[in-house]
Image (cartoon, rainbow, N blue to C red; front, side):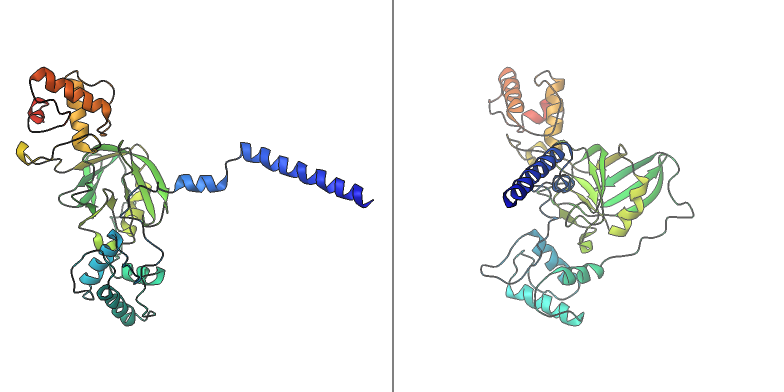
Amino acid sequence: MLRKSLLFFGVFFMILIAAQAETAAVTPDNSLVVAQREPADDCCPDEWIRQEIKLTTPYMSGPEIAEYQLALKKLGFYKQKIDGIYSPATMESVQEFQHQNNLKADGVIGQKTGQRLAGMFETEAVPTSKRSAPKGVVEILIDVDRKKLTIYDDKKKFKEYPVAVGKDETPTPIGEWRVARKAMNWGTGFGTRWLGLNVPWGIFGIHGTNKPWSIGTQASHGCIRMQNRDVEELYPWINTGTVVRIIGEVYPERYEDRVTLVNGDRGTAVLLVQQGLIAEGYLAGKADGIFGHATEIALKKLQKERGFEVTGQVDVDIWPVLGL
């Protein structure tokens, strides 16, 4: 009897496993779905935050520590150079902030300290008007130099918001894009709303932030940061496909001041070079802003035919040839 019972439960267990496997084959795994909602690991390192930042040996370092130093400096707690290193001086400034804000003065930047620090800089959204939302076609204009995002309603200015933009070494992509994706609470460090753009050479978007002290500065890895309350206000007005124009300087006016572009570079300047090569008949396909093998071969062909040194790079000779 015992043997029959064991045999029965063994068969039942095998059937159950088989059924679960079959279900898994046709039903998306929840963990996979969540992973697909999260930003890629190589996206936007300036937006990621560690669970705890504290004094260690060797010292912790990184862009998020530099941003906390900036916040503490703006509040008068940190007096040293902003170097992105969690040194004893940085820890002491955190302890002083914690003490004055009735937090455990352990010098560790955790969730409570981070939230309290952010709260010192967050502002309420200013009411738009009696209108609850734009009534016509909505477009977004982002002026990188002014660090402003403007909502247009049927080509008329509707509302303007302050933003943070990319650093010089990780610039915000200049050009005309479209909103490709909307998401709420997209990932750690991206605030409460995400509007992803269809930039072909990387992951860029308009999003909230847990570092509101950075608004009005060059601080990001290329994304456009907004106050959470601001991005929450405009989020329902924006649909996928909404035009987003980003204006600003792509490169210096003088050819001699421009950086030589080489294989591996990415960005708006590469995109414009590719468009020029396509127009001149040296490059086939679609410009994507990624300087790869095909772009290098096209440049070498142009240089050889035009009598330039064949380097496969974009230098002072190439810009004027492509009308750039």
